[in-house]
Image 1 (tube, rainbow, N blue to C red):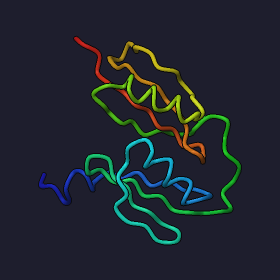
Image 2 (cartoon, rainbow, N blue to C red; image 1 turned 120 degrees about the vertical axis):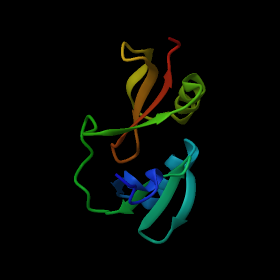
Image 3 (cartoon, rainbow, N blue to C red; image 1 turned 180 degrees about the horizontal axis):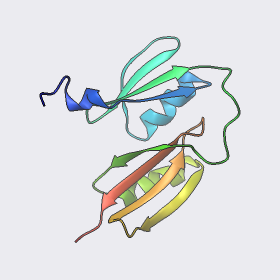
Image 4 (tube, rainbow, N blue to C red; image 1 turned 180 degrees about the vertical axis):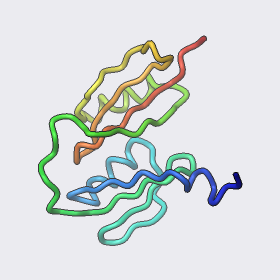
Amino acid sequence: MARYVDSTQQLVVEIFTRDLQKSMGFYRQIGFELISSDATFATLAWEGHRLFIEELPQLPPVLEFPQANMRIMVPNVDAYWILINEMSVRIIKPIGDRDYGLRDFTIVDPDGFGVRFGTRLPA
């Protein structure tokens, strides 16, 4: 089957936020690149893969545990673990080696969406 669009545009995560500026700041601090933004919508990217953020100030309260998360693969997850601890964000799953072949951890963004960083474990 022929590709309809480039793979970095095929599956795009779009999340909602109560405060676009706060959310953009969070994602830029953890390593996303800002592509564009206006008063209520921003496009960020991680290695060309898009993240859309739309401001909806009347979102329901943040859940205790995220309904979903996005995974970001990095070459050194321990470096991101240090960054995250300096940021004092809420950690859902602390760093550890997992039986599914990754060393990873999961945090939540300011609106309760999960973000998981992972590195492959040596074979």
